[in-house]
Image 1 (cartoon, rainbow, N blue to C red):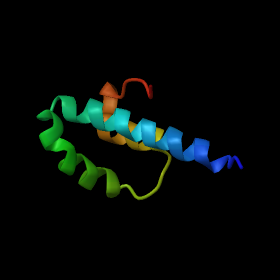
Image 2: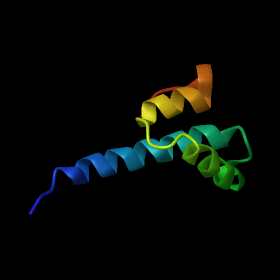
Image 3: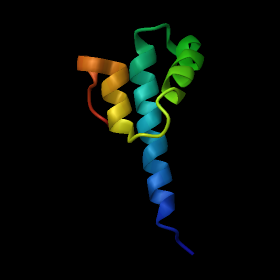
Image 4: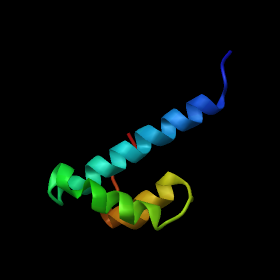
Length: 64
């Protein structure tokens, strides 16, 4: 059986991965992932595009 929530979870995961890659690219790559996740979690649970604007500022880039 197909659950429509699966799509939401998958899209959110992909957006977070993209944001993590963009953010950590200028901060040491994979070594900065822990710092990214700690900062990401400080925002709680707002929509990922809002977190992207806060974390990346004017360098937000695209979601995909």
